[in-house]
Length: 217
Image (cartoon, rainbow, N blue to C red; front, side, top):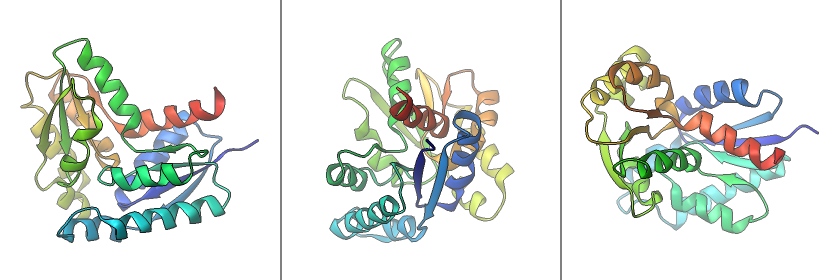
């Protein structure tokens, strides 16, 4: 039986990297893409961050996705953790994954074998607020913003986006791994790997493996 997974996006740039990850890791999965790029714009303008109104929007999107026959939901924007938690509580029987879950597990495993420090790179500032608390307390998260990289991606300059990520990654020291926080940053992993010998972790491939395991275990 074909499994349908709903992919819920708050950034248009997240669609390509997760689609590529599914093509490599789970090509026979049926994907349903649902984009609301006003979510990220509204969050950036929100004076109080995530609130009940934003949570209600996530619940509505999830309900719509499940109404299409989706058997699992994967969110691809990392700045909305509490809203995704609300979706999990509403539908506990449905596999609902945050974009970062699987990558964080990998990063924690690496860090616990070393100095327990992970550098978290992001191009979207709210991610550096919402995501560090998702790590366990014994891991020190070093948040690092990559300035102007998201702007470059929005202006259709992907090579500049990748170069900016690599430039920041090149200067990261004294951590056990570098985690690229957003799905949209996955395309910069190759350049970052060339710039720094530390393990470079991305979210899409890890997320696909984790979701596939839910249905094939």
